[in-house]
Length: 261
Image 1 (tube, rainbow, N blue to C red):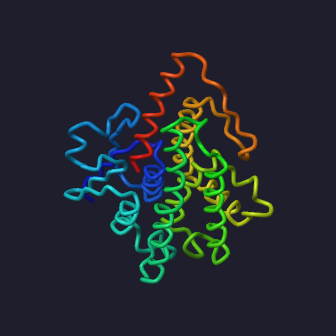
Image 2: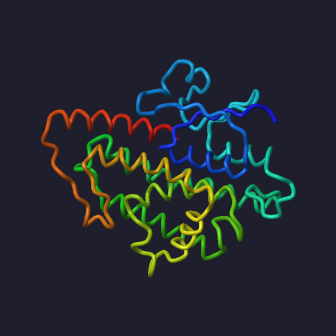
């Protein structure tokens, strides 16, 4: 096996998906931390490596891969054991298409809506965000996922694939603000069950570690108490000049995170 190097900051959901898979495949990877909150992604050496200055970035011998979904596919293609009957990256063409369909859903719908919400906070703070609008869009994504799960036990079939790994890291981020459990009984029972199964994975703590880092950052930006619904959101006034400056700096850095999928 050639040398694997992952450039990462685990506040990023896509980074966490790659870290989960690396652990599941028991790969020997060198991790190089790119501090998004200190502009590490803008260092010249990193831009020379990845002109898009995003994480995750995987270097495998001569390959430089800068999209999390492709990293997941590449790692499985190269290192998933042939003896596995239920593959994270299936061999059959139709099954692969179903997995890719859900990977594209993650990036074009779920992550995009999450990113738009957090980007709005970055631009104008919590007070300027149309919380009910973003809640509606994100809960609609929950309902879409619930519909997919009516077809099969996991996102792309009857067993777990990299589609589930990719989706759970972003979904868990949205869940910080709009908990799935609130609508579990009548709206998203299948999604809630799937989420519980993913959280029960032996490697899930890897996702939780980065998730908690992000929670602290978001709370620090806006003195924001995470709501169960939009009606219970608490937006506290910013009164001290130093606090405002600190929150603006954190908001700018959160923008770096959102831009660095």
